[in-house]
Image (cartoon, rainbow, N blue to C red):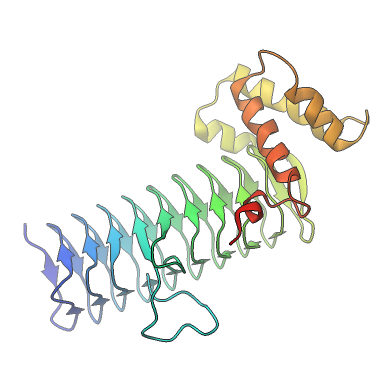
Length: 270
């Protein structure tokens, strides 16, 4: 089956479309953009230049993908980087995703994600796979969101924050420091780690023993009154034969603690 393009759509001559692509009314696709097989642009979808989009994605009405990042002093004809999107993502109405602010770098979105109405992903972010970002969540530039993260509505994330895999952020959270994997976090400036994300661990397929190990480590780090927080983390990290998930959790906390505001990626700021 060939692609289906509405007569009101504007497709740059240098764009590349796969098979079974659907381009709806009033859509715009920019120069050099590649759209994979079976991807759907519903209506009034704008895709900027040099965007690479994989297979089986669905972009709902009024989403704006790969247009210039929000930078003071960037002119309409200014140079900026690219945006790469994987496969089988659902991107709902009024979502905005920006390319990298650097001409030689990329904003990266993985596969099998659900990005709900009105959410924003800033320039130079890395968003992995199987992630849910609910309505009006706002992800600032240079953030990393690891596999399986779930954001409830109107979550605000500071620049350079890392959100650990299979964690959950409650609605209206304002996150200004790294979030360890596997936990639930809520509140704002600062948000607080509340518990283990049991539902996320189930979604991820962790077995009973793996979950038990993670919960035991969580209690030792966050619920014990022995010593200060960093001492408890370091003591656990020093143990031999540590469960690989616990090791990942502990090392993510240690990385965050290397920066005074708890944002590991700030260490690589240009």
